[in-house]
Image (cartoon, rainbow over the protein chains, first blue to last red):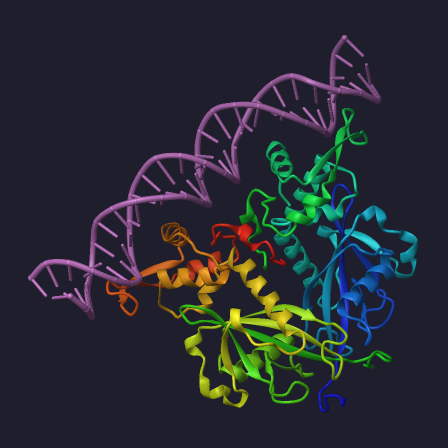
Length: 238
Length: 238
DNA sequence: TTTAACGGTGTACAAAATACACTATTAAAA
DNA sequence: TTTTAATAGTGTATTTTGTACACCGTTAAA
């Protein structure tokens, strides 16, 4: 079959906003860009979409290249298509965001990229329109996590209620009453209490929980209310 | 500055899912495709992204080409990038959805395209992956309209409470108690009651309302609760 | 044995959502 | 002129959900 004639073909890229949570702060993983323009500057991990791969495949490939991880939470965020966003050549970029368990990230894989985790509040200046990508991703996560249990993707298989609360508090930059938080979370039926305790952060120790995967999949798409004051999300874009 | 060498350039298209409401049924506007492949078959309005226009500009251009409308609600939906979605040539397509006042749509403009409105429940078979685009758009509208007052974009400047309720009922394919509906809607502060009545659908007549634009912009991004049972949105993707 | 630091729980009150039924209006028909 | 039929408009009681708030438990280290 003939091709579409007379149409301009463009470069299409994928950029990944990779989120991690270290138990205290929400972070993103950035690399030092290895080629011009902006070589050596902090950047999202990205790459060009190849002719024989879908966007989802491209984003998974790029995520794996940097982190070694497969099968993690990766969602298409938005496609950025301003004409001059890349000064070298017209490039449209589809941003994806990933939520990973920061402990599964294997440092040695990323040596090539000089990757580093940055707290969301103290990210360096990013190239092109990537600051906007990160802002969009933050808003999307806030929006979505208010209604769906996506934040569990940032935690290890076993986690404590105080850890989970810290995560919500850092995503929404707020404080939550722990009695109400635990009521709300336990009421979802998503949590299985283990007998083991995490003794690293207190003498008494906090019970570990794990996700009830059956309920997790069943309720993932329903509108649960995970945060108390949704109006604190005023700037959300979706 | 040099271009990125050795990278494949791809075709990038924009497709528009154009929603309208005729007072009774939610509809989308489709055209008969004018070129191969799939020439003559029902399709979304779309076009290729030009090298000197952004994605937003491209989608606005395409929407205007078909409807003559500018400045209407148009939001990027999702980018579809499967390798073989267009059998003729690898083409990535960013879908946008538009919410328009169906009465402002000017038929003569679209003569070239043989456009027709189809009720969402009885759309013809669409080309490529456009059925998936429409499904994604339906889900996004349901998701977003549950929390934000976007559905007003589908109504004329003056509308009645029964019309508005019909609209919500057709978007969610459900019935809503009119006492609770009116309480909920009026409580938002978005509605200004006019003295004039619409007498076309009942002997008694229903009061017209118009949007309180100040409150509309102020509250647009806040999480309002427009529909009673958010759990009926189980299949929502966002 | 005391201290300090974090973990875990319950209750009363307020707000919001829900279920539910009758009267009002008026043009057209009898 | 009266009746009918079709749609518009409104209020209250109950249930559910959200919110505010304080004390005791545990245990390692001092």
